[in-house]
Image (tube, rainbow, N blue to C red; front, side):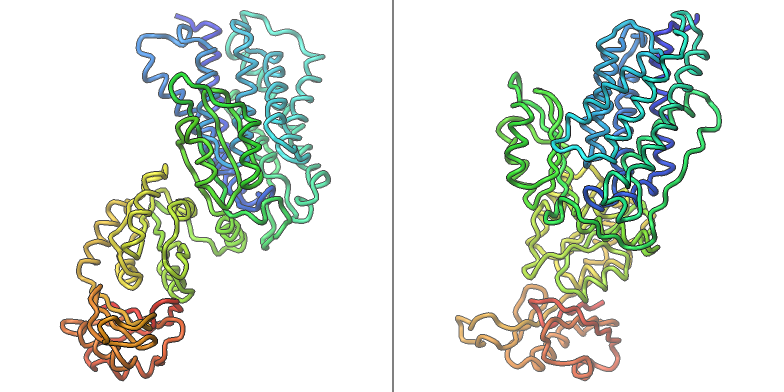
Length: 555
């Protein structure tokens, strides 16, 4: 039985989105590296891919759940409405949110014309509505970006319609595909020209020697659509490589740390306030604010130092979900590393270690971990840990909290994250470092945690610190050394004598003793070596940790 035009059009929609995703994935890293505006956080490609993946996942879910209903029975309106919502919920960052609004605008046009053949005229109208919707979503639109590129493409295809013959209502699918592909090729050509003009419109791009990543990404997306429609080699579009140097463009969020994204769903029959109401509140907490959606669902994006305050604004009005917090300073550093060839390859599983001290951070990095500075008290917030998880270049993440006080916050961050995240039972930095040697990027997070926890059970830890105050029992005075094995206080007094007692307590059965010197440690490496029995191998490192003169681990 031949397909109806409606059914063929809906199947074509799935194929076109698939082609867009393939094209974006192929140039994902290239798009990331071009990203300098509004922040050089290098994630535009990732954000655009996530948005399209969300749309495809929703289409596939609908297909699985439709049962006996055909695509005709489901209807174009239901499908494009679901896809627009999926794009909204999947969006991340400026680029993802704006792309979701392009999709929403196109969906609004398609829904408004039920039963009308999806032909070049409707495509042109949908592109025009998409451009208008995207512009309306941004408080202060910047020319030379994805907004300009989409507007130029919509103008080009509208002008192209003047010389086209109307498509017959009974045109076979092959002809429909060819006609739409030809029109979208016009859009791609216009988009490429617009991308090249971008640096003349936006000085930040010119200063960094790049074109706009979002504008380039949307051209790549449309080129992928053409490939899907033609079923052949895609359009040959120009590549744009970022200079292999660190760029520091001036951007609007230079003073804020966290790129915060989340969705808000209205509770029950309640309705959310209009977007402008929330935008005004969010602008008191940060900048680069985007709030899009409707009274049932909103997507929120803001650059801020207070992610928890941003989410708190919506907790009474509705349910906050799909929270994603990224540390933009870490993202900028990662982008610079990629451009200089220093960035690690994307892995199945990566590790986030919470540390204090530059030397310890370097030791963890040397073993392949991503590090999060926990400050002098080693006590980062849940949102800081969530941002750290987001910064790890891997599909799954293992967190080494390295403090009993951090474990619950790490667990909360793991539950918030949409990634697969496991938290290892590492209660001290030196123990986590000893266990980290067993981590493997090719294993899952669950498998890695099982291995790390197994090692942690056999690592004995100790430490020596300067007493912050006199002991109530009179054993030591403020400023004297205090020594621990695990959490048990076992020695106090002069630094050398105290350290020696801790070493002796850890020595039985020990083959390797690691000693990490902290900030202001009163004995140098040579002095420490004299305190260790000759049959034990000693590894001495400068950790720079602020709160302990020495951290020790025995294996």
